Length: 301
Length: 301
Image (cartoon, rainbow over all chains, first blue to last red; front, side, top):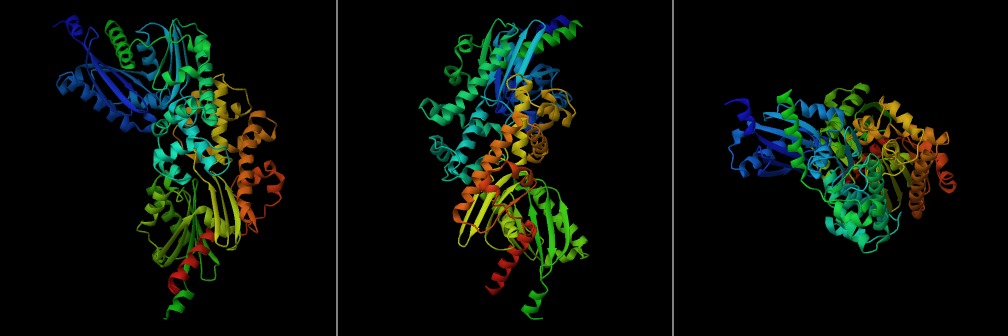
């Protein structure tokens, strides 16, 4: 078989790893999806071993779903979009991994999400899921903003909404802040009856545990609770400001991705909300497009 | 030897374990200190193994400092004041430890700090070190407030001041918040030149790393920086409110303990600041008094 023929049957795997889960999809040369696997979180910030495990597990599940033998793994050209690899030392540690693929191309989950959202064309995206961040790509220019991680940043994200709610509820239970309907919702979520019960369930926990509280904040805000409205408004103001920064290089399209994208939409400023276009393809397809481009360049190179 | 004679030569060890370090002091029956040892942090929130290691290491160093053989360990009656054991499951895990002492009595670092500060008498304390919390004890009444831990609560603590500073500096570097002299201080502290450099050094780090930034916030506030002043003022307002809650049961004495106690004093409301009395003895002496009282009660049983 010549090299062209090999390339014509090349299989790809696009992997999107974040703070809550890792999703992998296998594509054939024509970029038709063959199978998908979902595993646990894959954010190096929460541990390298877990990240590698989640990548491998989602890959194996995708191979199985595609009806391919597990040995096919070392024939796959992999595109990896991972949260956390905007932090330099995490990028290096993942890039140095003795990966099981034919080739692996690594970039941020933000970059692959943007490629996917606009089917490989230029554009901008904001991800508001467990975390929050923004990315804009036009020609040679790109802007990457936010994504500083749980507790340090990620305003407007699920984990941030949950953290703000928990903070306020604890202050309120101690008598230092105004009362809110969030108190009952959080106490009943954890099935406890006091502040220490909440702390017991949250102390030292990861961002995904906090993100589970976001739906209560949105529900309370939609019911008119002043504390919840203040939290959601502060988060949405940041997301609107983030979008305006991304618009500075005039991206032709803009999408919002992640579990909070839809519920936050009514809270965004009108000039931002009116610019939101649907995401065209999922982040793992973006990861596949990224890998294909890099791989073809390497072969041509 | 009768039991009384045994009791007359009983040795005690008072151990104060927190988010930054673990300090142990050995006392004789007359409560004269014989030797002290300091080891790394002992907060179960950061890991049980490390907590047990720090307790053992500080104990061994204290025995060495006291000129006692290491085997003396199993003759010591230990008082343990530990951060984090206000969280139920951590209390249980530490209490079930196969400890190396003759007897071990466990309570919160807040409780032993209060006993120490007022030499065993009733009173109130606020600890503002890596974390923040308050405790008041009068007769049968006690109040325990705050201490919800890094990121969730602990307003006015060193880690909270550091986190607020880092959050603001990152927003400012991304163009979402007003500029502040804290930016240069944090960039130079970490020897980096941009936001991701700061994130690289802080992502996933423990409260003690954030607490190291507190001195910059206090310095900037004292130099008139508006952002730093707003952060320190918000923290100090919480500490003042915390003190007023503790005063509700009319403690006869009130002390502030921890690395932030002194620098925060000028920022507290006058009605609170005027009530601060010096701490009479260190927390590890409080832990020793606690252990002695429990041990004598058990013997009298």
